[in-house]
Image (cartoon, rainbow, N blue to C red; front, side, top):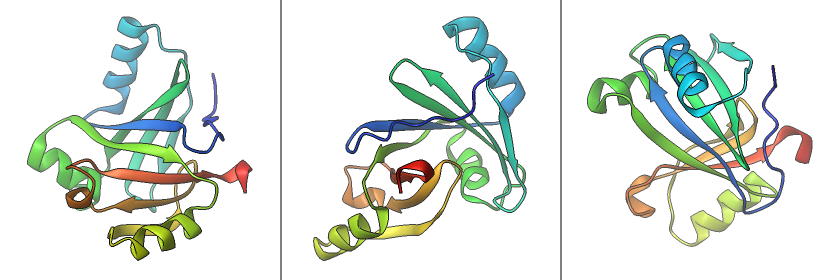
Amino acid sequence: MTLFNPSTKVGALNHIGIAVVSLDDSLKQFQQLYDSPETTVLERLDLGMRAAFIEQGDTHIELLQALDSTNAIGRFVERHGEGIHHMAFTVGDVDAKVEELLSLGIPIIDGPRPGLGGRIAFTDPRATHGVLIELVTPFEAR
């Protein structure tokens, strides 16, 4: 089993987040169909979710299961069903990047704050071509 070891290369695609109904079923499917390696399941009651990062080549797939329907993942699944929730990019300093984006008129809808794999923030998808973008400074990169 591997723990989440994200790319620390600034500008790299860190991971793609996929909202799922059942983390266990989704993990099994990825492992059977896409030769995904075993991984560790993370349970974050404070965030109301279970998650797993699957190493897929040069990036990771983050599978996210809401533990209740009131958090962002739960609301997403209620409205849209399972699917791609966000794309995450590694940045050198998420706090500085947030300030830069705000100065350019790009709204931040969440963060900066600690996340599963590092310090994170999310841009408003209306400002990024309809895509929810997560900015990540991996814990070990700071």
